[in-house]
Length: 141
Image (cartoon, rainbow, N blue to C red; front, side, top):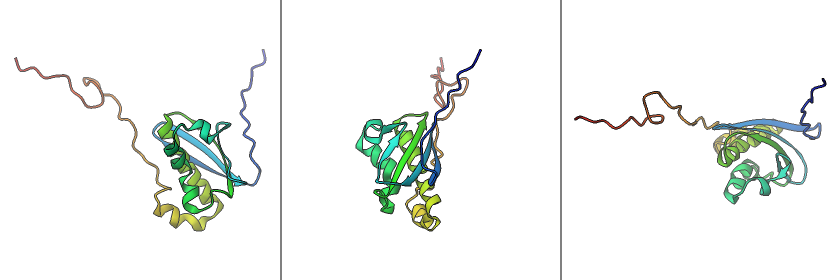
């Protein structure tokens, strides 16, 4: 019986630059290439995918801070986490892709903390506890 091979082909030009971003449980794979400033996430426009203005600004902040927001198109696939984690993962992925285009932008990207991976993740739940840290109520008598 033939198996269905589920292939997702992301159509990006051969002259594209790639960056991976992670935050909490979210992973973003980002490609940027010369264009008119379109921002596409999982095949949808950024305004459709990210619900709030603040999250859209976070995701596009490396482009706007470097002053190249109208010169590059962005295509990204994002998995896992919530909207906030995905926006931060996009920010790191876009910054790493910008670094691929021009290595001389590294000091400015580092100055604005775009190349730093935020390592804060949810702490695991321990046995004997109600969550990660909360202990059951203590009774003396």
